[in-house]
Length: 309
Ligand SMILES: Nc1ncnc2c1ncn2[C@@H]1O[C@H](COP(=O)(O)OP(=O)(O)OP(=O)(O)O)[C@@H](O)[C@H]1O
Ligand SMILES: [Mg+2]
Image (cartoon, rainbow, N blue to C red; front, side):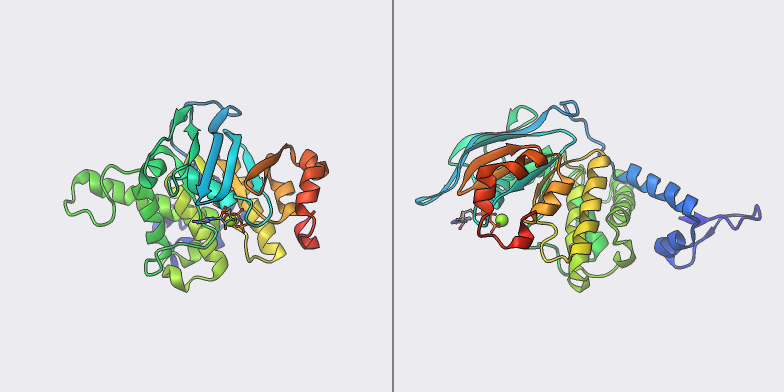
């Protein structure tokens, strides 16, 4: 990135890098800059279904652990372009649902279809390639890698040659590497942590690590982004900020499945909500409908007040 000294002379590199450069921008320049960042971040994938149509479908999905039925014939759909909330009390089966969708667990029965095609027994990495990305309830990052490297690894899933660790350096490899780094940097900016791009993941503050996980998932250009309690451990202001980011992700063209415990937050950010309890779907609908639903209210009784809107 360069700045124009404004006297018609040659462009000179900015001091202090990208972040300092953004700080020096006028409000107008900054808006323009972030519009460009959003453009780089937007998914560049062909998706077979139109906005509003079913992108992912769970059909009678069942997951058993021995005698425990963690998911019991659960069916619902996620429509392209929406933020779908997946809520329910502790142990309801929310994370199990993500695990069954992303190839961590094999469903005991039922199926998951992405754009009408069954995922079948696809392995985890294959499902990432097909377009489902996720973050984890307990953060999983490459602790010894920098923030930037963690995101570049995510872009790997979409490239023909491996960006990191490739032994043969072809011209295509170099081009892809350069593009991957540029895109990774844009992603760090988009999620608001570009100022710590060069820091090891393990040295980042907790909130940055959560955002870094999201950036890494976005790096795979997912058709569907699944977030498992991304705001866990955040204070109210941090939660608000994160919900703002999730909205921007949706507005940028992504489809989001969001697990979140805080009912108030879920109501504010989601387009529709699916409610699980003891492995079963007990309700589905618009946030306003879910709020009034007697089964949902009953399921959340006994949950501390501040978790219920
Ligand atoms: N690998 C596993 N082996 C055995 N039981 C499991 C396993 N994973 C989950 N379970 C059980 O399945 C049920 C659903 O768990 P899950 O983690 O999906 O719930 P959750 O809705 O994500 O809850 P939380 O809000 O606490 O994260 C629980 O009873 C849990 O103990
Ligand atoms: Mg969970």
